Length: 237
Image 1 (cartoon, rainbow, N blue to C red):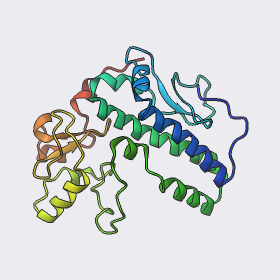
Image 2 (image 1 turned 180 degrees about the vertical axis):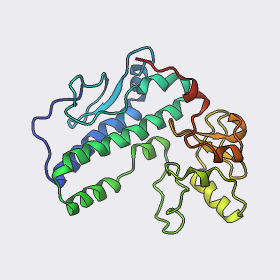
Image 3 (image 1 turned 135 degrees about the vertical axis):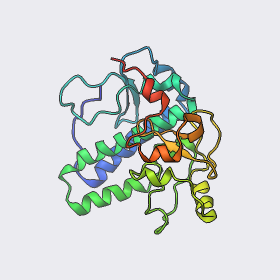
Image 4 (image 1 turned 30 degrees about the horizontal axis):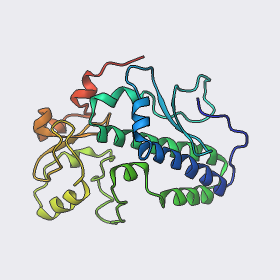
């Protein structure tokens, strides 16, 4: 039930202003208002979405009824996973999906911008910490031309490299720094570069291979890995 838009932002500056207003509301919901936000995301309710409005208010509500909706819609059903995960992990997952929604709304408004204007818009947005970084307390990583261009990002599509045990001690140290705050979605322990880990392509949580009974060899043959939770989760209407 996203609020109606009386006048769509059209310039880079206006779109960025809209983005920051929505972002401020969403950050408040995930930090100072987090108890109220958590309570509203009842898994027993229907599919719920998490909205940030340009007047700096936030809302947990049903998705838009009109098809297609007036704006890109947030992730559907964020409430269903609430009680199946640790609170910190669930908030991090909501933050990741909400970051994606914020970008989609900004670039929906920016569809008529030219190439340089879109680049400037993204540069302004990219200078701000993501919701995920705010919620997890993670500092934005500095640019590393050679190392970060590979497949060591958690969101990389080339997950096979992440699933391999690194034998080089230097790479292990670098990976430890990057994923140091990652917790196993099964046992809850911190990331350890000496152990094999695998990431779920659905909920984006990470697991010890031993916790989910996946070996490095088996991981190589998996095109899309679904963790035990995502594999058994029933689709709610």
